[in-house]
Amino acid sequence: MPKFEVVNPGWEWSDRYTFSPAVRKGNLLFISGMTGTDESGRLVGPDIASQTRQIYRKLDQILKAAGSSFDDVVKTTEFITTTERYRETAAVRREFMKNGFSAATGVIIKGILRDGALIEIDAIAVLDEPRRPAARARKRAPARKAAAKKGRARKSAAKRAPARKRAAKRTAAKKTARKAPARKAPARKAPARKRAARR
Image (cartoon, rainbow, N blue to C red; front, side, top):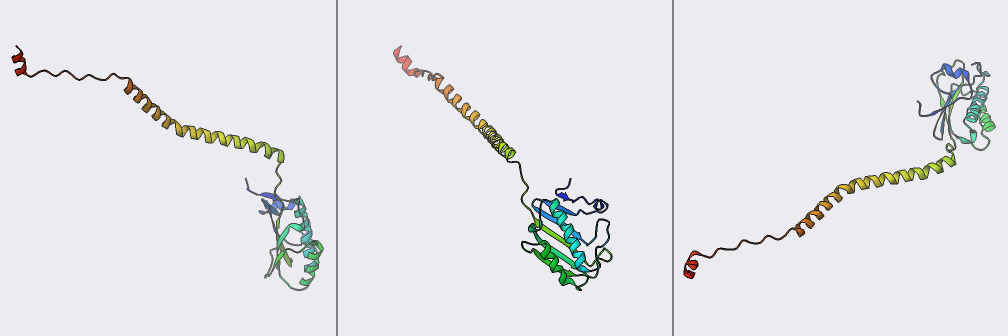
C-alpha cells in the first residue's frame, strides 16, 4: 500500500500511465508536470499563452479535487521551449492567482515529450492538515493514557518483585536466628592431680 494519497479529478486517461496527476503526503500536494492538452489528449491552442491557460485550468481541477485552491500553491516550475509570447503567460497567472503569486522557476529546454507542447508546468501546494474526528481523538486519549499507566505499573512491579523476595528471605532468616535457643558450653573436666588430692 502506498504511503500517500493519489489525487485524481476523475481523469480516466491517467490510468494508462505510470504516474498520478497528483499525490498528497500529509499536508503537501505534489502535482505532476502537465501540458496544455484537453480530455482527448489534443493540444489546446498553437501558442504558449493558450497552452498555459489550459494547464492552469487542469491545475484548478486537481486543487479542487484535493479540497484546495491556488491560494495554497507555493511553487511552480515552467519548462518552455520558446520565449515567443512568453510574457503573455503572466496574464494567465494573474487570472488564476488572485490573492498572491507563488514562487516560480522558468527553464528553457530543447523539447518536451508531448509533440507540439511549448510549455509544461508542475506545482507544489501546502494544504491544511488532515482533519481528525475530535470525538474519537478525545475518547482514545484517556484510554491510551490509562493503558500506558497500567503498563508502567506492571513493569515496575515486575522489577520490584525479586527485590521483595530477597528482603523477605533475609527477614525470615533473622527471625529464625533470634528464636533458636543458645547452645550451652560443655562443662570442663577437672585435672587429674586435683581429683587425687580430694580422694
